[in-house]
Length: 375
Ligand SMILES: [Zn+2]
Image (cartoon, rainbow, N blue to C red; front, side):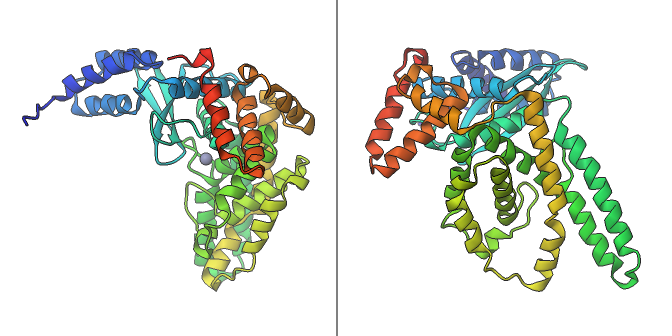
């Protein structure tokens, strides 16, 4: 068979036409404006192609459902906060839950930012509503990416400056070991400094705390499910840039959950966490780990997250609110945004207890049939 070679400009035209037929026609328009203002540099063409390839083009009920949920979550989680500027959010489908934000310039001074939330499943398949707690997590990252004033950046970095100053003074008398101490305080700086791209431990812990604020026990359960079984010693204390080590993450989450009054909902997570503590680290890793596990920074991040929730006026989940969600579940058309995610969690939990997976799937299929998700 003869395969026709499509040039990049041709590919762009094809993808723009496909995008026009999706709920993201607005993104196609913006890409057109970008290309009209950009030079013919292959890099610009490549950038436009990369953006357009992310747009989901299977326009079915599942996409309408995801899109509607994503837009409501974005607006609920922004709350009262002002983003000043053009912010777009859209889903893409892939191997994991993740987020990325691209700034697309239109003129020298004007542009738009596009946050793409990767949903962990195949495009066109039925939404795993029992996993959508993670959608909330990714949308909170979108909120931080959209804010002109990110409170985590301000408050955590201020505290970090103080911590690093103390570390310097602490090292002063230890002449022989200053280089080792210096390396450790550099690493504290590197891992904890809140960055605009959010590839730091502080943002990750703040996102967890905010998810806990709005989702309570649904979020505790999500972490317990994510970390039950599959953990070994290496994974538990693994030090990397984009996420805090699992031990630290769970410790911070448990503290936050107790503070918000969800302690009695933490039995599973508590058990999982304590089962890890029998692990003994080899001394070099143990010392490095102890230096990075800053209780003062964990507390600062948590306080900053609560202030963020207050400022945005985010709805804090309580037992009473959860009862309201239970009552709403009888009227699926009344469910949207955070309430819909919580309903999905409640339904999945009930189905699991009753060994009725088919019942859960039927419930999701029914939701998808609501007129508002008509493609
Ligand atoms: Zn995250």
